[in-house]
Image (cartoon, rainbow, N blue to C red; front, top):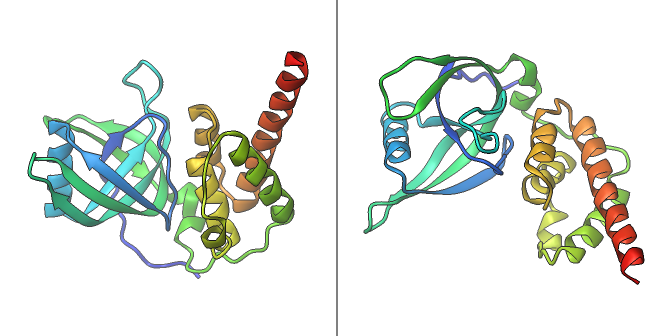
Length: 210
């Protein structure tokens, strides 16, 4: 069942390297650059929507897919920063950039490719998640990362995949590949392959050092 939501076709976008997030997940942000303070203020005065997208390395270019978020909380600090929380609504695909005279960038976007994001219930059972969870715990431990696994187990399978994709210590390009994967099953398969690759690579490095 799809949720009827009128999403804006033209959105302000905050490009940020190394950060992805998904629908129904929270993203806290500390905003301090003047242009993005303006973006957030304009969004709050409008519909509270803003897009997040990865910028490419050492360039002003951005990837073609990002996620639309809605500002649910905001607080202005004494030194002029803004602390905001975004809740993911739907992934989007860029159609074109809008030529404006604002300090931040705006894009015309389409949500059609990711229509599944707006479905109310996404409880489809994913195969092989238990095995991937075991490998993920090993992967996180090897990288010195701490996750509250008890709370993690309370998430549904799709939320688990999205959470791991957001916080896993993998490359920006790998994160983007996961973001662009349309279905939960394809995300799970790709994430599992990435984790297996890193675990295998670490095992080879360990043998070579012995």
